[in-house]
Picture 1 (cartoon, rainbow, N blue to C red):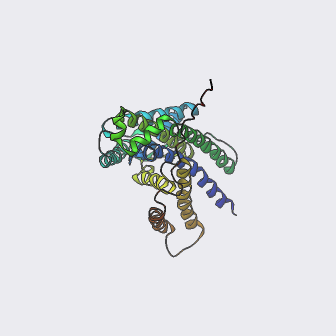
Picture 2 (spheres, rainbow, N blue to C red):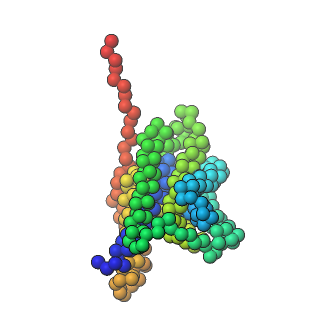
Picture 3 (cartoon, one colour):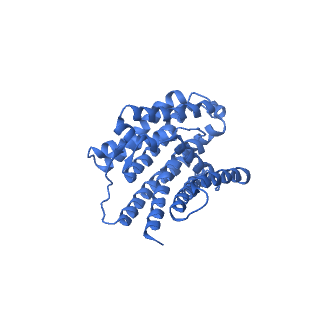
Length: 304
C-alpha cells in the first residue's frame, strides 16, 4: 500500500465520522419524528462558518464548537417557527430553499470571505500528515460518540416515545394533550445543533470552506446515508454514512490510481441509484431495522 493511498483511506475514515454526526442529526428529525428536513446543509453550513470565523479570530477550540452548535440551533429555531406549521411536502420545500437562500447570502454579501471562502488553521500541528489524520479521526469519533449517546438517550426516553407518536399519528398524539408544534420545534433545534457540530468539525478538518462546499447535493447525500442505513436506528445511519463515503472516496481513489475507460465518478452515481433501488425493494426499512423502544422498568410490587 502506497503512502498516498493510505492517506486517502485515513481521510475517508475522518469523513465517515463527520458525516455520521450529520446523519444522526437527520435521523433525530426524520427517523424518529418524521420531519422531512431537506435543508440539512444549511445547518451544517452555519456550524462550519461559525467555527471558521471564530477560529480565524483566535477563539479557543472548545468555545468555537459550542458556538457552532448554538448558532446552528438558533437558526434551526428560526426556520422551525414558520416551517413546522406546514404539511410534510411544504416543509421539505421550505427547508430546501432556506439552505439555498443562506448560501446565496453568504456568497453575495461577503460573509466569511464570500465567494472565495475562508481559510483557517487546523488545531493539530504534528510533523507528519499521518499523525494529523489519526488525530482528526480520534476527534471526529469522539464527538460522534457524544452525539450518538445523546441521541440514544433521547430516543429511549419518554420524550422519544412522544417523538415516535408524532411520526406515526400527529392527530392521536395531539388528542393526548401533546403540543405537537413545540415538540417538533425542540427536535428541530436538537437536530440543528448536532448538524452544527458536524459542520464545525468539517471546517476544522478541511481548513478551507467556501459556499460551493455546501450545495444541495450534500443534503441528499446525508439523506442517502439515513435511508440506506435505516431510519430510526442510529447505528444504521452510521453504517449508511460509512457505505456512502466508501462509495464516494473509492471512486475518487480509482480515478487517481486506475485508468478506466469511463469516469469512476459517473459510475458512482449509477451505483448509488442501483443501491437505493435495491434497498427500497428488498430492505425498505434500511440495512438495519428501527431500533426497538426500550420500555420503562416497572417497579416490583411490594409484598405486605
